[in-house]
Amino acid sequence: MNLYTLVRTCPPHLPHLHSTSSTRDNATENFAVEGRNINFSVNTRQGKMVPILKDCSIRIPSGQLWMLLGPNGCGKSTLLKILAGLLTPSNGTLFVSRPKSYVFQNPDHQVVMPTVEADVAFGLGRLNLTNAEVRSRVSKALDAVAMSEYLQRPVQTLSGGQKQRVAIAGALAEACKVLLLDELTTFLDESDQIGVIKAVQNLLDISGEVTALWVTHRLEELEYADGAVYMEDGRVIMHGDAASISKFIKAKQSSYINSLNS
Ligand SMILES: Nc1ncnc2c1ncn2[C@@H]1O[C@H](COP(=O)(O)OP(=O)(O)OP(=O)(O)O)[C@@H](O)[C@H]1O
Image 1 (cartoon, rainbow, N blue to C red):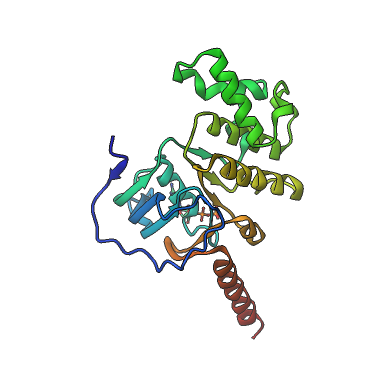
Image 2 (image 1 turned 135 degrees about the horizontal axis):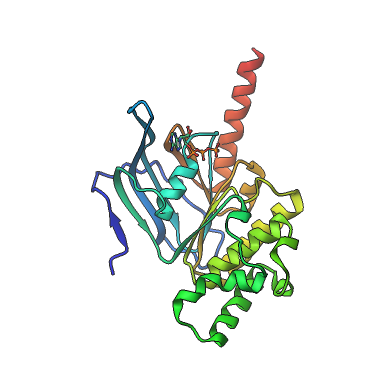
């Protein structure tokens, strides 16, 4: 099956791609996520169309962890939901490798079964697997996020970061190729935050074929990324290696602070 979802073919206007020095041996220049000239608008109660994404283009190399940053309201979550298939753009072209999985900011919206084992196995019910296959997939997925010893734990006894890792394990158990992760660390303390990022890094390293796009506000998380995308006002305005994006954002922040002080 052709995995391209053709919304409308437009001439591509990808922002300048900096050379992306790959930090993973298995990285290739194949893209697991590619969106071109994506537009998305919402209809207000007054019947006015408000553009949210404006010719937004993005591409993420296979097997890498990339971060998506930008000011509040610039359209990060909207873009992620479009990539996940939860929203439909008004035009643009979109390709995301499948299976793909969207992990919510609040794990309580996703981790719903009574135990860790039951929750990770939840999505496998529709795959017609034997019990042994289900157990093996659950065990490998929990291993990848360093949660094996929590197999029988009631989910309500887990910390926020542990729940996030269970949610990610659920996606992995379904053999997902692309993880779309929406501000997973917003509600977490520092150790849970690092635990979740490291779990994602680890699973990319061991699988070799999972790609992750991580929406965040936290600049310090960039040190874990292979690359990053920076958005403003509904557009991707920079796309490249994590160090360059970090430098770019810091320069913007300091020029903003200087303008306030002058
Ligand atoms: N259904 C909707 N109706 C009206 N406006 C919307 C709707 N959905 C999103 N928006 C607006 O679109 C813009 C982008 O929202 P989005 O949640 O994608 O931004 P974001 O970059 O993820 O923000 P944040 O960092 O604050 O989470 C915001 O101004 C938001 O208010």
